[in-house]
Image (tube, rainbow, N blue to C red; front, side, top):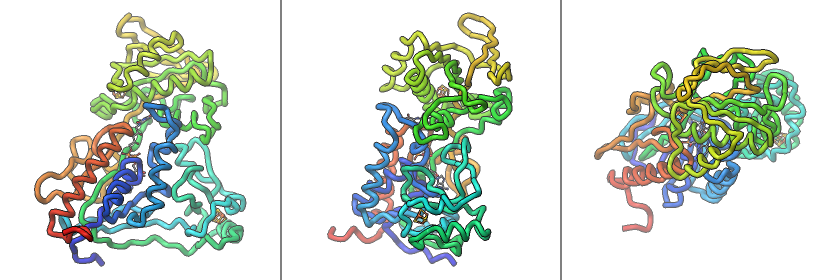
Length: 430
Ligand SMILES: Cc1cc2nc3c(=O)[nH]c(=O)nc-3n(C[C@H](O)[C@H](O)[C@H](O)COP(=O)(O)OP(=O)(O)OC[C@H]3O[C@@H](n4cnc5c(N)ncnc54)[C@H](O)[C@@H]3O)c2cc1C
Ligand code: SF4
Ligand code: SF4
């Protein structure tokens, strides 16, 4: 049963990607209690799934681990993973948030020793690698997971295999009776850092994703290039494991298209340039063609663009390919017209990467009525009643540094909301 709404200075952060994690540590370091709710089994969001990230091409751990340390060291932050917010009632300064948490079946005694994984025989899709490979039914979501704790896949619960998995744990950390839970929290403000999902490439039917072999998406490219990814960092073709040396990167795959996402996803031009750099680092003889409408590489990364432009093995082709078909040996073949030279082309590649855009996670899946723009990005509330604010890509397509800035700004608005609502001042203050 829902609590009657009471005033609270606790800040609820929904989503544990870079924006949500930043919001949580910034608010808690300022002295506020924070509840961070993340729907997957680990914090880190999509940034954790990148191989490296611009501007410095760092490993995602550089940015995330420092925040995890701040979370570990700050008792003001409570983290719920495998959890979402199913309802919110009340108003600024006095909301009641209903949290729905799914079972992990593994408690805090887990040392991540991995013995349970050895006892599992069923394999489940590895969502961290976008389904490019599988994991045992007892698994760590990825090597840098936070919390560093295993998960038992619901698929095996109630089977003899689950009993064998439990018996393999010498720390008694597995509870097969764990159940979904729902509970209410009183919070004064809410930060929505629910991020994005990749646009579904199958919807761009002329590009043959899922039908033509060796057509992949940009997020899958990140996992192929990652040392902890499905190919241990070797950029190879999914169909036959052959080295992918002649590669086409297709910009605006789904974005800037009224049949799909009408807006510019803002990050995918730079994402593809990063992919060209991955390929050129990995194979000295790699040849990369980038098919584009216009290049939108924002300000500070102009030099990255110029460096690639100067590389004779990277070609920028001004064209939006019309279609992709299957050629010999599983080669994807691009068909279209170069709009500068008017040349018609039919070109075969080892691999084609679709630069699919970013779609807001909650566009069609929000359990709560939130003010959204035409595309599903959350619009911040304004005025004296404002108590719910978006951060990161939940508010629009942003890169990591912009997401961090937006999270910090959302924290300021959330603090204003809980402090100007008649709630008690922080301890020690007049
Ligand atoms: C191919 C590609 C490459 C990129 N490379 C770079 C790069 O090199 N450098 C760079 O700066 N940026 C890069 N980006 C952009 C970067 O990924 C984003 O800036 C970043 O992910 C934004 O973080 P976020 O926290 O806003 O969202 P997310 O990373 O999406 O995190 C949102 C979190 O919220 C959780 N969540 C969602 N819904 C709910 C819910 N209802 N309840 C609870 N939790 C929920 C999700 O599980 C997730 O953990 C790239 C993007 C793409 C597409
Ligand atoms: S659940 Fe038990 S067996 Fe599995 S990793 Fe954790 S401690 Fe090891
Ligand atoms: S960032 Fe580049 S690839 Fe992405 S939608 Fe905008 S123009 Fe297209």
